[in-house]
Image (cartoon, rainbow, N blue to C red; front, side):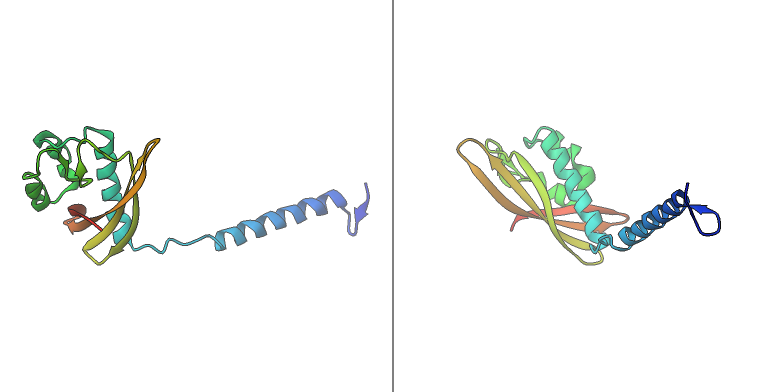
Length: 155
């Protein structure tokens, strides 16, 4: 084996150089990561909206007192009370008729203050003859330690 000054082999020098390059890349990639610039209020409010709609889409979407009770942990008491007078045949969470439910949803943008947030919800319909998207707005408020949905409206 050839040596490179003071008894070091070329293999040792290559290993040291490889370790230095790996460390440099690790430092650079950590320093260049994209920071989360979203307000913590939006992160929390968006989580509540996502959980509500995930539960709603994953279960019976038809409105009934029992189905409303199953969703109460996501809702303010005021909004839950207001929903009790929902017109039969309509879905108060997607603001659609029960015979035409959306197929999917996505939680979108958020604007927040210290105790209130407005979260965009996109609803999607996709069939062989139809491709449609609608926007809703979920009003989310902080009550105690929890963020709860206080209203849903068309955007």
